[in-house]
Length: 161
Image (tube, rainbow, N blue to C red; front, top):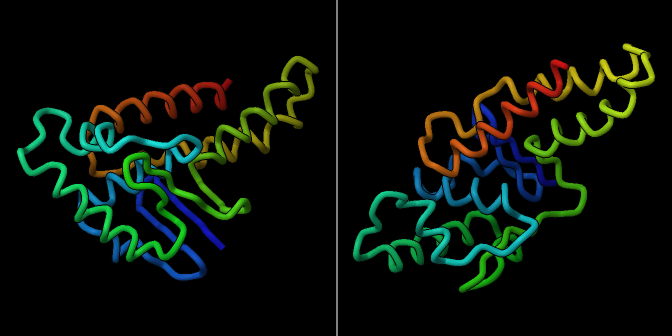
């Protein structure tokens, strides 16, 4: 089973084994978080370089990215990180991704609100709040991370409503 938690403390279980400590350094964890958050669409190497070095990419960015991706592939195991120029994380269809939980919960709660039954949306809204009150990618500062945090703040606002 695959389980991923990207809010507050990073926790990653792939094929039944915990791997967050084996992820390759700060940039490897950032790349993994970005690829996981954007797993529904391929990400170009250029885009990933911009994520890792938002201000100014070093002259060795492409070679450094290749090394990071190689270490990620080794840690994640076969078939999880696909592609060379277009990269994508492929997880089991039943993977538990904590980042997706609050959005799914809000989608379950919102239709019940106009019905006037306060108990029906309560549980999914509480689940959403539980996840989004934890800081996304704690300890990381990046334009991409800030965008995700703003999005999760909006999800938190919906859950409170």
